[in-house]
Image (cartoon, rainbow, N blue to C red):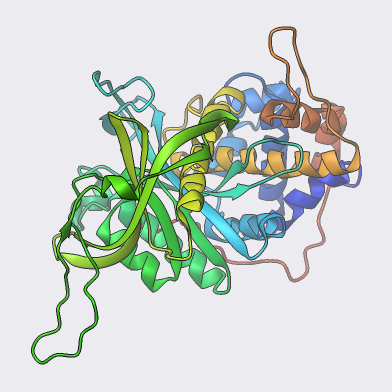
Length: 437
């Protein structure tokens, strides 16, 4: 390990405490190097082949690392978040979305049939079989990029209704899994200012109630026909206190203002904006949730309603926050294209629950390592005649990390001949997935 690049070792050494054995960490280090060097599918054998380990007869031990070894994945999430916090400060923006991993196979128990968000449209529905992941990312702005990066930190697998785990319990939806992730993060970092961004699937009363209890602001898209009521005025009179005001609908035409706001693709667009504070009567229990709604009209026939539970956020800030949510979709696209997400072939339940989160963690680590390389040496931005780039992208960071690794054979020999000092670092990790159960 002494001959490895310090810029890479500094980000990987903190994770050794989540492994029960030193040799398990060394094998994971080799798989990390192979995943960066590999240019095809991210299978275990593909990573070993990229490292030049064609003659490794004990190749099954690298498969057992994902299916049998004890790894405290939850502790690894905390370490990863602590690495990102110096880049964000005390105010952290969280982005949540669901990712569909297209997988087939009779031995994959967690697979189900879902709507394909990439191939489907408003008028055309496409279904596919795969695994549904709830992914929580942190939005980070870098000086070498013109857009924020959504760095995944928390990945949880949704199990279908016929999964063996749901035999004695009710199936947990993506919203319930997200609430559990937010509770864990708030317990780890009680003093952070957190803001959650999500699409219309996360406009749920239960999520809003949990975010209010955890002091987390939420920005998402709301249905236009939601039950919105005016906030009643406080009057001193006898009798029962009025809880709801009159029902509210679309804002009055006189309240709309024309604004030039940042839009998708780094462009600016002229839109009509109106906002109002109200109470949302939602959920089966008809919970009353105070929120601020922002109505955005791009065309006379095209409107969207945004909502936030943070009343300190003005209309322009709400729109900017919701537009920045799209960066997590870019993360999914780049993870599939450059890191081989959906190309892994594990059938073991433990391996499935670990491989995809580790690939998304690899995306975050490559971005952090590339940012450090940029501060030390700079990054070469690759450009072509048909695509002129002025800012670095994830592909440039990946090539910079590959150049930093240099000679792969030297790294393999260095890792295989390394022995850590063993006093006092033995632990007993739980070996459970990111969210147990």
